[in-house]
Length: 90
Image (cartoon, rainbow, N blue to C red; front, side):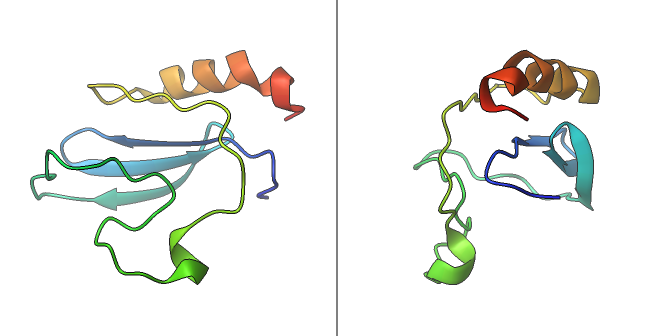
């Protein structure tokens, strides 16, 4: 269940994109392409610049944003979640 205090994390390990909500895997997608480098970082927005405010943006607040230069293991996602969760009553 998503709430205004949900925690989101996304990882890409070179072959699979994984979305975690509150440290639980909620979506996986096999991806074999080469991610683009350079340009801006988009958070809570589509990667392809299609302007559609009903699907591109979130009305939530993102008090903690971390960007890594490697894919995190599920255990690391869980550890990060557990470190921050009490601050936001999750």
